[in-house]
Length: 101
Image (cartoon, rainbow, N blue to C red; front, side, top):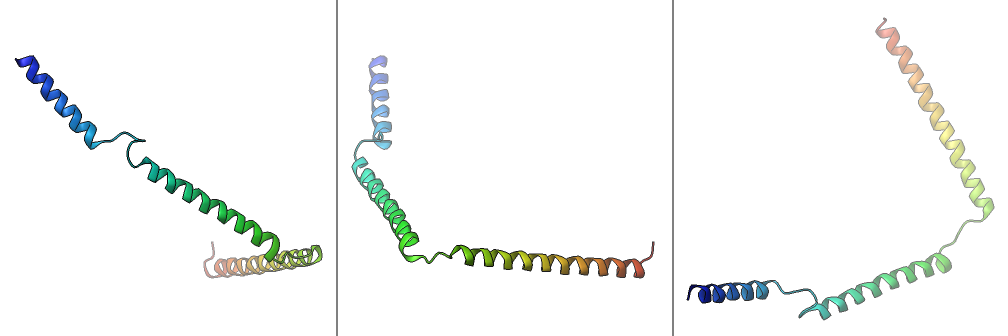
């Protein structure tokens, strides 16, 4: 009688556990796969729209415009670097004058 009672109890617990944690692919899996397909379609549509915008709507600079812009950025960077160097040099000598070694 004891063996039979343990069998019934263990079977009931196993059914309870299986009921509370369904296996993947059972029940609502078709809903999640439809959601995944919908999400994938949204991602594909995003990439198609991005490509269309980059090819047809963006006005890309010509080679001459790009070269001129690069030269302006180069000169501006050099000018800022020289200004920072001059400020650093002046402050260094000012601090050495105020606080001698």
